[in-house]
Length: 466
Image 1 (cartoon, rainbow, N blue to C red):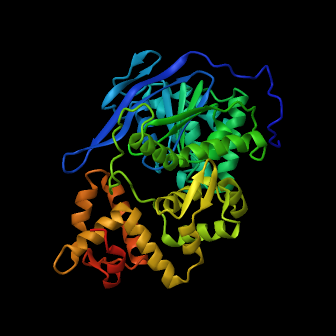
Image 2 (cartoon, rainbow, N blue to C red):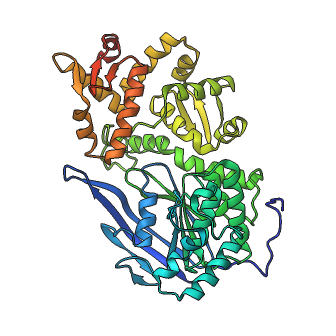
């Protein structure tokens, strides 16, 4: 069946929004770092999920969307605020939900049927009824004939189908999905998304609502009735958008592309808003002084996890396209998702080499110079911009200048980063800084000794930054 945005929905099948199933009120969540400091992940998040709707939680890495989903499931307790299921605050696992995980989470020693029966067995459902319901769910998601197969015998798409069957067999009020398609190849993911829409629209799946976590903008617009866009570090709801398009939805329809552009603009528009906020703080229109934005630090301004070469490639493409273009157009031509380009955009904007205007990206004069430079000059330019605009790179280089032998062990920086990041995130930030510092010939890193060393050629870039 071909997708068409203009296809009229079947009135007999159309879903209506009913009573609220889940309500989150001012949910805050912090974790404790190894040194005992609190690491805020979610900040005062409030939203509801009602019968008859699909809601997407959309955000970049660090937005806490998976943590929020686990709070909704009752797998972790919020540090503040409440999550209620049909008006009753949770005090443990949510009885009305089932989850589908990114990593499939199947037990390898059990067959497909046994994996699907797990939830029913935990609820004390008799064996005969378990078998009947499991076989019906397996048939519904297209795995009839594989009941006795083990997970190792299945492809990734088939294993995720088992995850779907295991979730819907318990007939939950709300189906919670945590990046359910991100571990699959593009074609398999697209096929499963379409089948999910078909089951939902045909009222075949025994669920009343769906809450899906994703970082993929197009996926959110394809599936959701509402999109909650989360900011990062800590996660807050930045915007809520209604997607009033009939299903199935056409990616290339103007209204679909317009919504994608709007969401993209929300995700990438923070620099413009931050600049406006600073202007108001410094020159308030009502005469009342505002507090200035805190200075960028390695904690409040994380490095986008991209390579300098990848960012340079984006700038070269942008320069070749006249210096300005929409990210959707660039992504479409390169056969990438917009989301794949977002970290590269963040890096270019951070270094002052590009800027965003809504859903469009525009190269700056510095960006043009960088894109046109030979390799040696590009390294020098990158070093200068990294020291000026990337707080962690600058902090490492400056710390190295302060030691007698211009060396420092990595533990010094990891301990500092863990004050604001999880252990895994701190490691990722440091690895990105190593990549950037090496490219700009600011410092080197000896992995055997876990030690940083200042590059003698770094001094010109560091002049005036101490």
